[in-house]
Image 1: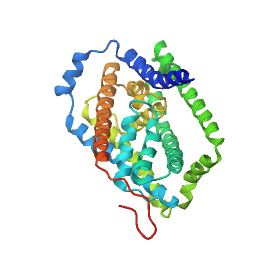
Image 2: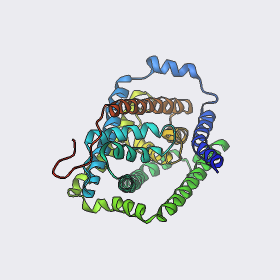
Image 3: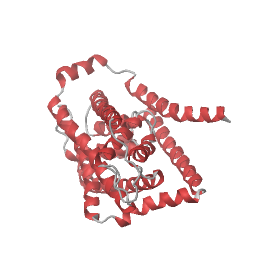
Image 4: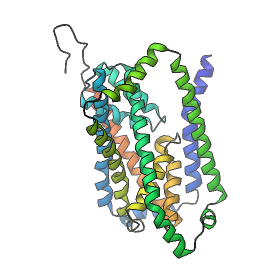
Amino acid sequence: METSKIIRNALKIAFPLVLGGLILWWMYRDFDWTGLWAALEGGMDWTWMWLSMPFGVLAQVLRAVRWRQALEPLGERPRLATCVHAIFLSYASSLVVPRVGEVLRCGVLKRYEGTPFTQAVGTVVTERMVDSLVMLVLAALTVLLQLRVFSVFFAETGVSFSELAGRFSAAGYWVTGTCLLVLVAFLCFMARRLEWFSRTRGLMRNVVDGILSLRGIRNMPLYVFYSLAIWMAYFLHFYLTFYSFSYSGELGVMSALIAFVVGSFAVLVPTPNGAGPWHFAVKTVLVLYGVSESDGVMFVLIVHTLQTLLVILLGLYATAALAFTRRRMPAVEGLSPVA
């Protein structure tokens, strides 16, 4: 029994790494690595790349602020610094095992703030539902705003959808199909997990309390503002990198928005930080907008690598900061907990 459990856990870790690695290998099997060093040394504008990084940090900080607000209706008031460190650590840990960060950050709050684990999980579920809604609305608006652009483009160039689809290679279709199958399998796995949770009434009650905490938020407009600001920060974190390269700097904000939306859905495939699916999806959008295949591959490699390094650095910072964080003692009658 223990052996089978170890094997299952090993597969959970190995499969996302192998999947992401295979997609990356396929994309970069003929890549000119000497061109990468040339781009890093002088072929790109580092100013815009550096300007994009604070927005990546801001998005995670805003996520921590919003999470803290969602916990207040449950009577929980964790320190903001702990919430921020938990978010930083969750994103970094998900680079190793996809989605494990959602559980880890709830464990951090339990360890340092005494926040009930299952209630924290419930607020995370709510958070994901809100984020999904924002992304669906953003995707719908993007498609509607670009309908006219696409119509004009197809009319003026005479490009048909069949010709456009023909730009994909057979391997490209295989990669897309594989990513979709993996996503469906992941959703089925999560459904089974939720079924297991439902068998434990006490646990499920706390999770439901966390999910319903949204009803008790005192300042809902502020919660909505945080939710929108998080995705605006994520978008700027991505969009500003366009100006680091000559071939993407003139594409415009709408092309960046489409690439951002497509890339955001691609990371749902459980690979470390979306490695592989994100590269393929964003590169494909850039190619459809006229960027050469080699430049598109170069763009996604540099941008994703540098943004991943930022996540790693924030995770290391959070690990060090938590090592010096005092745990809150349980409240004693007549006394307040240690702040």
